[in-house]
Length: 237
Image (cartoon, rainbow, N blue to C red; front, top):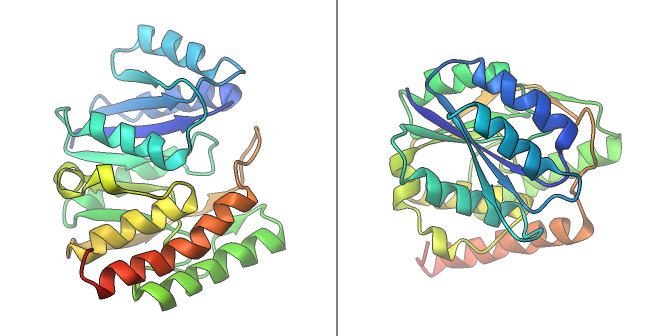
């Protein structure tokens, strides 16, 4: 199954130079799109160099740091123009294990969206401080209660979509960005009745680089669930 893996980057030089070769080693049907937000550390230039060496790597350059959600939307718009069967979201920092990609591809053959879940079989998170773990865990409970979704890990960023799912989502009207973006995309897919499946993953905190989590990202996730609930009630989503 032809797959495109979208990897947003901002100051991920050390990670991307190891990640892209690992992804390429998964097989000839794997392609990667790096969406770089003009990283000061040269991530974009390194991605260009690797792309010049391998035609299965592409790079989309953006002028400044514009956020995770808009990076994925830009990547999705690129993906639906390509000859691929499925499209991945994946972090650049090795918190998502490249070795899991074949399992996602196996599962997507019989559903529409596959979510790598940290909470479907207990709590599978490594090296997070307790405060971060509790924030994530209870944020997911909060999201399920407010929106009505039954997904256990609504904020996971390790996902695979069939290309036709993304073709049917109104990407121009996706309004959220950080973790809220993951919630909104799940909600839109759920409301359209797509077959969504969670598979267990082990999430390992980044090996190098700096986390992009901020108070603004947290605040956005708090209010977006109520906006989604309202859209559901007035049947706009």
